[in-house]
Length: 207
Image (cartoon, rainbow, N blue to C red; front, side):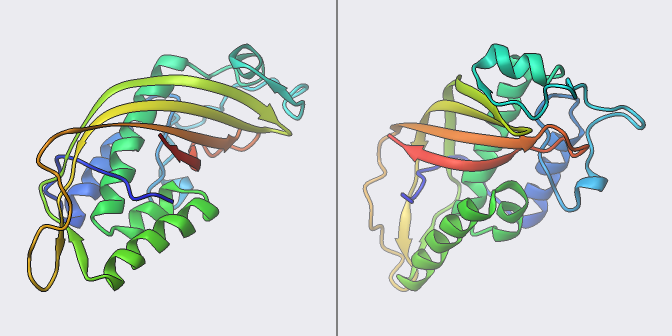
């Protein structure tokens, strides 16, 4: 996994927790998990996600197929949530916030992110705050459903500025004077047959 270059965030754990809560409270097709899923269901009480139960375990590709199976899916609201998740996850990674990452990432992706944080610590490095991030573009790249699991890939283009320093000398070890345009492809997935509305990050690719 490559280190993520990031942006604008003077963080304490409480600030990130508040932001996560605000995202969870939004009524969109993309819910972000914080703690137990039963405590963070963005659907109204008693409301069920609309799926075609007869076809829910079929396999197919394309946005049209996803919308046929998962009737609640709305591309615009999903992308808004994906942008928020992109920002929160990158900031959490650079702020060594493994607790928040644990709630937002698939197990395999979390292991890779955790390794990145531990490697940075072993080298005696830290990311200086504030960090700055500006998402320029987010596009739905692909969608598929396989045996009741929906997978959606989103391509992100962002301007990122990051300063990495040595803990002992406080010296800058990377060149971060200018904004860096970065391209990423992230894949999110969820079990559309379950009541849990949360999507998790299952794959990352940096351009």
